[in-house]
Amino acid sequence: MTRPLSIRSVALALLSCSSLLAEPAAPALAAETPERAAVDSASPEARAAALKAKGDALFRARNYVDALAAYAQAQAAYFDPRVLYNEGRALQALGRDAEALTVLMRFNVLAPPELKAQVFGLDTLIADLRARVSEVVVRVNEPGAQVSFRDRALGITPLPGPVLLEAGRGTLRVVKDGYFAFTREVTLRGGGSASFDVTLGSIQREARIVVKSQVPGALISIDKRRQAQAPTEALLLPGTHRIVAHREGFADASTQIIVDAGQNRVIDLNPIEQHPLVKQWWFWTGVGIVTAAGATAAVLIARDHRAASDGDFSPSAISAPLSRF
Image (cartoon, rainbow, N blue to C red):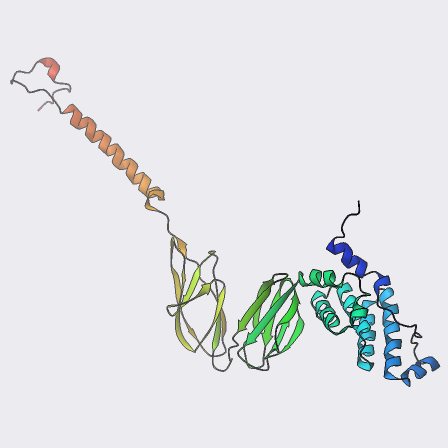
């Protein structure tokens, strides 16, 4: 019985050299040769075909970086959907899944049906890439800011729309001259989406503070306005501000600060756990003393319970020696 192919096996099959979209053979490019000069003087379509052949040869040699460069030159000379598909394949081989998905989706839209019919498992490949990619929207209050994720430049704000990024953890960074840099560690979910609203603070007009706490779940408020769970950051106008860290079952930790424009401060506030009364050592020590005293009193009271006397005492009625005066 034939076992169904897994997504991974399909992807590996697509990455095999035999699945490159081919075209009529074209001479490989060599540096500074008569053939090269002939190609340079050829039609745009012929130049693109030669550059594609060069890229395919580099791909088969697993030199994916240079293959991408050749494919880019081919596309600049003359658009060919076959080059687009092979470019997506090279990006996938480099682990650049988000870019590969973008290119292959474009191929899926632009390629004619007869060309797409030559590609085995295109829909499966696109679905597999999509499961490892997140669609991200970044909105920034200031235009002209540079946005990057994992050191990959995403563009200058305002960004034109959603960006496809590899799933997983990474640093989102937004910078602009004259403003505090925004950095945040985020985790992107494969097959999902995420949205980030970034407010850049002016160094000339505001101060930035970061509030941390060693108490998990501590809620931070600034000037009686609730912010978020620690760690959190805020932009403040110059002046005096009161910061409070709160958690149920803990005594609040608070501080008062004075900030100037352009300051960048880190503050650590740790609420103190409040133990119930019955858990305090001094409570149980006190209870022990009271209990012992109560037992003694009970003994004394019990000993004082005597039967009514008629005034005559027998020697057995006195349990303690008589005092001498």
